[in-house]
Image (tube, rainbow, N blue to C red; front, side, top):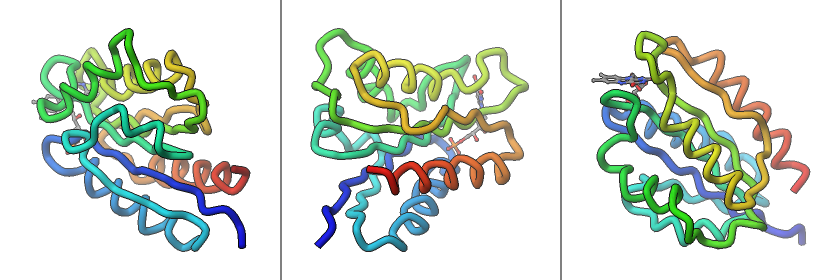
Length: 152
Ligand SMILES: Cc1cc2nc3c(=O)[nH]c(=O)nc-3n(C[C@H](O)[C@H](O)[C@H](O)COP(=O)(O)O)c2cc1C
């Protein structure tokens, strides 16, 4: 039997868009039975657990003046720190949600993307930054992620 790929789809949200897209992502990717997929709010997910997975797909919105959603602060602080989990085996992709009306467009997703790379995780596909009309960008990101997961 083929190896099962362990995937976690994480979301950081205030008003629910990232959560909705995370569940849509998991539902789409679950069409392949060789994938074990978990969906979680980063608020309920210790960053140390990232090392348990083959791939982490992170969908994160930005709030306030370019900061993480309040519930995501702890996860982002841990990831932004110097004493990280060892992420050398992790593959990842980030979908950043935001609005170009704000000067710090998609800042939270950009920071998560940079921090995961800094800790040695391997970027599966380039980060996609979504403005308020995001459906086409989401589909493009998900299509690219699905194709790359097939290589793991
Ligand atoms: C009060 C407020 C502050 C926001 N601040 C930013 C920001 O600094 N940068 C940005 O790119 N988007 C910002 N946004 C836009 C949100 O990130 C965007 O609407 C996103 O899709 C929300 O996703 P969520 O429903 O998962 O929280 C802000 C939205 C609100 C309502």
